[in-house]
Image (tube, rainbow, N blue to C red):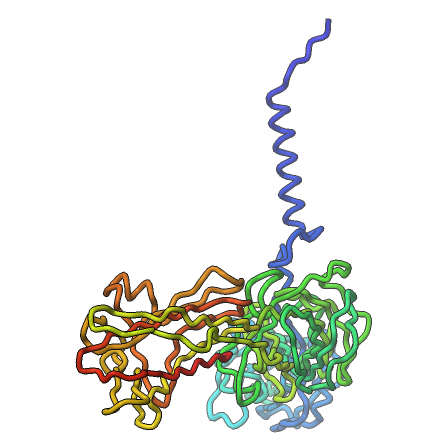
Length: 563
C-alpha cells in the first residue's frame, strides 16, 4: 500500500514560486499584453556626464612667465614636459587662462567642478620654498569666486586642486570660466630666492548633457493599408486633405527635427493630439488626445489586425526625413526605436479613424511628448490638417397643410392632424421654427385673410415663451414631442415647446409661443447624427367672441441645418 503525504510547506513554496514567476513575467515587459501604457515605462532619463577641458588660448595672459597655452594644455597627471618658464628666481608669476564652453551646463553641486594645475619650483637647488594657489574667475569679473589653499611646492612639483560649485557662476553654460594660477616667490639671499613655473592646467567638468530639442516639421496624409507602410497619398506634403468621411481610417506620416543634441535610442515616447481652428493650425485654442481603440472620441486610433503595432516602418516617405521610426495605432507611442542625430528628422506613422467627427470642419494634428509636454517648436505648415466632408442632411414636414376646423368660444381646439418633421443627418443638427403669420403686418398668429375688419389671433399672448390657452380667450401656440421611430442619437426638444414639460408643469392646454422675429427659434436639436427620427408638432388655438367670422390662416417655416 502506498501513501501519498501532502507537504504543506512544499505546496506553499510551489505557489510562491509560481506567483513570483508570474510577477516577474508581468514586470519584464515581454511579451507586451496591453498597449497603454507599456510596462515597464520605456523612457530613459539623462544622467550627468564629465569631460576634461584644457586652456583654449582665447584668454591667455602671463606675468613673469614665458611660453604659450599649448605648453599647459596637457593632463597634469601625464605632463608632456613643456612648461611656462619663470623669467628669473625672484618674481611672482601668474597665468590667466580660459576654457572652451562645456558640452553642457556645469552641474550645480558642492565640489562637482575641479581645477587642477601642475606647479614646480624654478630652481630646486635653491633653499627657499615658493608657494602657489589657484582661483576661479569669470571673464570681466572683478573678484575671485573661489580660492584654493596656498600650497608650499616640494621638490619634484605638485598638482594643486580647487573644487567648486557651479552656483558661483554668473554664466550658466560655463563659457566665461577662467582660472588664475599664482606663484609666490621666496625672498632672502641669492641662494634662497625661488620662483614658480607651471606645467599643465585642466578643468574637470561635471555637466548636464544638453537635452535634444524637438520640432514638428513636415507631414502628409495617406490612405490606410494593413501594413507598416500606408496606401497611396491623399495630398501633397504639408497640404490639407479633404472630404474625410465618417468611420474612414487614414494614415499620417509626420516627422520631428532633432536639435541641440543627439536623441539616443529608446529615449522619448509621444502622443498624437487633434484640434480645430478657423484661422489655421497654429491658432488651435484647445487640443485633445486622439482616443484609444474603439473609444467614443471623434478621432481615435485603429487596429490594423494584420500589422504589429510599434514596429519600425520599412522606409521614410517625407522628403526631409532621415530616420525610420515606429508605426502607431494608439497613444502613446513606443519610445523612439532608432537614434536620431542632431539636425536629422525622425518619421512616425499614425493610424487614425474618423469617428463621426462633425462635418465641414478642419482638424489639425500634432505630436507632443508622452508626459503631455509640448514639443519645443511646431512649423506652421507642418501640422497635418484634414477637412471632414459636409454632413448629409434631409428633412421633410408632413402634411403641408393643417386644419383646425371650426373654432368656437367654448373649447380650446387643435388641428385635426399633427406636423411631423422627419430628419436624417450625418452629424449634429438643429430644427428651427419661424412664424410668418400675417407677413404684411409682421404679426404672428392666425390672421383673417378675408372678412371685415381684419382680425388676428395672436400667438400665445404675443409670442411669450409659454402660455396656457383658455376657452373664449384669443390664443394660439404649439407643443412638440419626439417619437420612438428612427435611430441614432437622442433629440432634445426646447423646453419652450416640450409637450411633456408644458403638460407636466403647466396644463394640458399650455403651449409655446410663435414669433415673427428675424431670428428663428430652435425647436429641437441633437449633438450627433440621426436616421429618420421624428419630431411631432401639435397646434392649438382658442377664440374669443370678438373674433370676426372669417377664414384664418398662418404660415410656418421649418428649417433644419447642421452645426
